Image 1: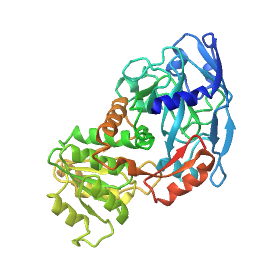
Image 2: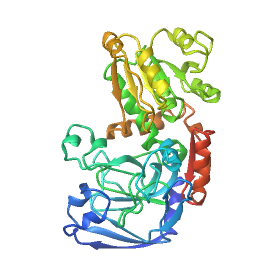
Image 3: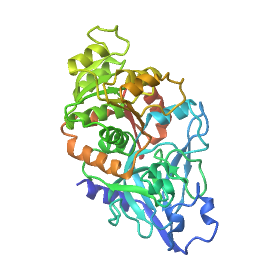
Image 4: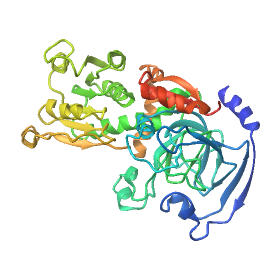
Length: 415
């Protein structure tokens, strides 16, 4: 039913296309960043002229509203994909950028958590598993575009490619205007991990997969390389989307999860995401709401601590509270903050491992999508997205996200 309805909607949109010869030397420079897979793949490009034109919301500086621009022509290089969006979600990093908490190249199209359907394909466009993509297929895709050839990619860290590009983070350039999720369409470039997903699920379940859910999976994968989760006490600091998703995934793996967050509502939600006990970081030591009491209730010192808030105090707690041979995975420290004191002797004597996770590898995106598809009935994942606004009301949606009521605010591409 949903696919049939979508086909009717696509029929209402008209576009013409024509093949273009392979790019001449230097043409790739007119798109953002160093050459990527699509720039060197060879073959003909596809020029699309769409009616009505796709729209992108452009951000320029804190305090200034987004401006809508029309993008009447899209040129798909070999391996590229044009996706019409169903829903995007406002990530915390979008809030930090628009508030001016961190620098960003401007003008740019923000947004990097989204789900949509394929409406056009460049030559040879394929999913992450190598299968051919088809028009009408529902997909999510990685936050990053990587070359697949540099030393960093060959080490298995494509998210840190030497020439990495990031959706929702790049300066607006001619030829890649549809580079972020706050738009009607996204121009997905070759070198992006594209994952087909269930066509019938609520889009609010799938939109966060491309950032928050996949990052949660990467964080636990990093921890599991040091400590088995089964039977372990896992301390999660921060009950945002990443922290709550980590809690559910860790509970599925047999862990006893403790979630720490200053907000009582988020702590109550964490209990529904698998936490056996929650704690308030501001509670007096030893009180019923304290971290110490929560850990005692859960079974003792944690062997895994996932820091998902970015608070320097929480980072320090993650390092201090770990038991012998434990691992701290730092995820939330993605904006400027005061330095955290480090007791090196304690780290050494307790055999502590400290790992950083920023973004994720393609396998984490695949696993995150499967988690949502398989476990959305077990955990209240749909409740992670609260208010939903139209694209024209994007600034109001970002303001709502900054206010912190909903874990995520959704943005519909249509209105």
